[in-house]
Image 1 (cartoon, rainbow, N blue to C red):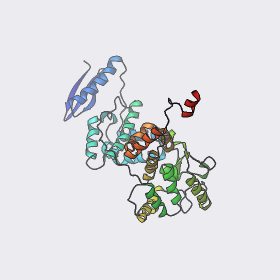
Image 2 (cartoon, rainbow, N blue to C red; image 1 turned 45 degrees about the vertical axis):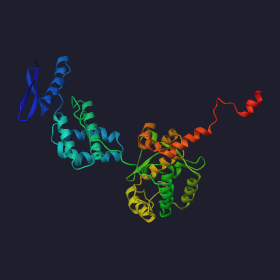
Image 3 (cartoon, rainbow, N blue to C red; image 1 turned 120 degrees about the vertical axis):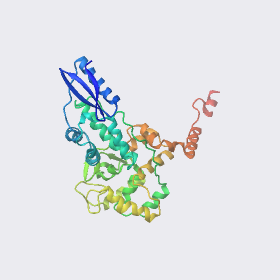
Image 4 (cartoon, one colour; image 1 turned 90 degrees about the vertical axis):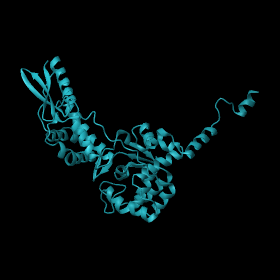
Length: 365
């Protein structure tokens, strides 16, 4: 036997015999935690692949992770959010802990504590960061197991999607001010994400083909790639939108970046400023219930579904990565009685291809 389990205080350790020396590896608050660590390391000793992981605190590794992973792979907006989570949430709890000594139980206790003060969705976002950190630590040889794999995350009740009717949209537009009235209309008629809307340049709009090319997103005055590969797409415009955009192009402030919807001062638009100074006041002025700006996108998809557009077409127009994502988000709208009735009517309007047309039947005689 090349290992054993020992207890010091309230913590169980896996004790290994490596090259004639005893090595203590922290397991956790239960004997089962230590047994798991022992079993994992005994396998490596037996087959000759055992390798000690370098000593490093959680804080030290997060600095490496940010430099070698986050800075290279994440969008500026995501990177900023993840850095805030690391600095404000994770480091106060795990900063000085040895990376390889952090257990599933410790992380679960952290999650349970957070559940008392924040919403489940916030915790899941924080856990996404932790999982990425420990996944890379495992891949880079700083760990032999990932303690986040078996952490129970809180379940999230699906939030009700806020949708404005076409009538509510019209009242909203009537009470909206330039330079953003046309922007609100564009978002409703295309279903673009806010960042995609504010990142639009006039060169992205093809009035001949009546299409808008989504090529970038704007975040804190910085252009970045759209959310996913499927987000880079062409969105079809209605005749009304073409007409409104042509008129707006004449009145639009000229900017160095050729932005379609710049700020009144001809700078890149800050989304939060638009919501606070223009969108929310327009809702109040119109007497329309308070909804998020993202409801314009939800309302677009709802209208597409109600009008009977092809599901694959809807997916590509709004830039979802898959039909499953479209169905997961908006599937409940397909159960609407009016929508279902329209689908039946569409079926009834199609002549059975197995039945010959009357004129063909007559010709056969």
